[in-house]
Amino acid sequence: MRDKLTDALYGLGWAGVKKLPEPVAVRLGTTIADQVWKRRGKGVLRLESNLARVVPDATPARLAQLSKAGMRSYMRYWMESFRLPAWSAERARDNVEIKDVHHLTEGLDSGRGVILALPHLANWDLAGVWVTRALGVPFTTVAERLKPETLFDRFVAYRESLGMEVLPHTGGSAFGTLARRLRSGGLVCLVADRDLSASGVEVSFFGEAARMPAGPAMLAQQTGALLLPVTLWYEDTPVMKGRVHPPVEVPEQGTRAEKTTEMTQALADAFATGIADHPEDWHMLQRLWLADLEDRGVRPA
Image 1 (tube, one colour):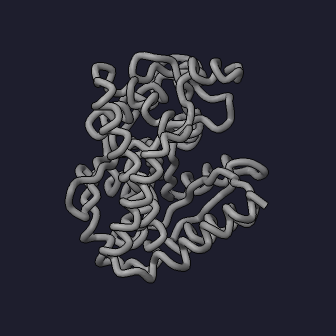
Image 2: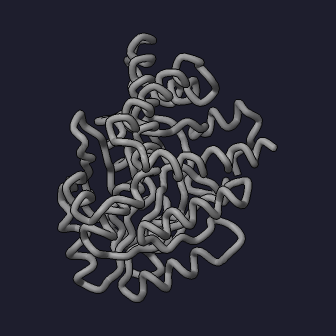
C-alpha cells in the first residue's frame, strides 16, 4: 500500500504540477519544503549531518539555515522536474548557463566519446534537458531501480521524454551498453557522488572516507572517452548555472585499480569544490560517509 501511494503521489505531481501557473508552482514548492524542514524528519537531520562536514565551522543556527535553504533547493528540483517535459529548447537554453562548455563540445567534436560525471547538485535533469534540447546532443544515463516497479517505469518514461536513453543500474548490462555508446563517439552522463553498489572506490571527501562509484573512471580507461566533472548551482534568478571542469586524465602509471582510485579521487575533489561553493544546493539526504554507514551497521565492502 505504501508503494502504491508513493507511485500515485509522483504520478499526481507529473500530471498536476506542470499545469499550474509557474508562480503558483514556485510558492507550492517553497511551502512544502518549509513544512518538511519544520518536521525535522530523518532526511532533514541527515542533510544537516552531511552539511556539517561540508561547512565544519558552521554553528547550529547556520546549519539549520543551510538545511532550510537545502530543502527549498531540493523542492525546486522537483517542481522543475515535474514541468520539464513541457519546456521548449529555447527555454532550456535561456534558463541554463554553463561555463567552460568547450570541454564538452570539443570532446564530442573529436569523436572520442565523453563522460559527464555530476554530484547531486541543483537539477541534473534540467542539465540533461539543456544538453538534449539546447545543444541537440542525445545521451545515455543510468537510473537507480526504484520500488515499486511502476515508479521506476515512470522515471524511465519521464527521462526518455526529455531525450535521454535510460539504463537500469541493476538487472542488466548497463556497463557494456555505456562502453559501446562511448566507443561510437557518444555522450554518457552519470550522477557519481554516491555509490549504490557497496563496491565502489574509497576516496577522501571533505577530509573523511567515503565511497564513490568506479564506473566513470573505468569507462574512461576502457574506451578512451573524455571524463569531465560537472557541478551545478542555483542562484536567486530562475537561471541554473554550472561549470564543466577540466578533464580527468587517465594516469600513465599504475595498475587499473590504482588508476581508477586516482581518477575517482580527482572527481571527488572537483565535486567537493562545487559543493563547498554552493552547499545549499547539494541534495544529499542519505548516508554517504563510511563512518555513518558503519554507525548504521552497514559494513563497507
